[in-house]
Image 1 (cartoon, one colour):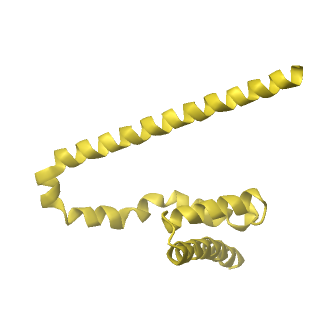
Image 2 (cartoon, helix red, strand yellow; image 1 turned 90 degrees about the vertical axis):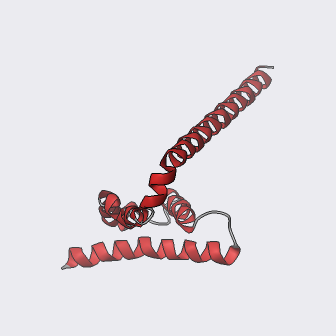
Image 3 (cartoon, one colour; image 1 turned 180 degrees about the vertical axis):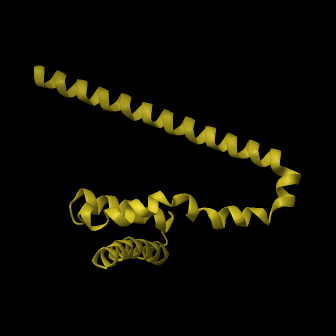
Length: 131
């Protein structure tokens, strides 16, 4: 019984973080989804040791383990668009693949650019220390 209450408490903590982030996005008109803000807040809280990992670990593992189950409503919702998928499936697939590739290329280019800039700053710092 004690384990069940602790587990439900952990799920409640994660849910409260999600609800607070949804409310913050709505209140502040932020251009990101509430779930993304919630993950950022949770990461910050864990990295700054505001929240202990033990406080949410079992609940988070349970949710991660059953993640595919949480996508069922999305997949079932797609079933109602069967005619659209039959009529425009190829175009949708091309758009999804193209947008994914564009996102990956942009992310890779930005990462390489920032990495190059960081190396230049480190070299400049090393050079100024040597002088």
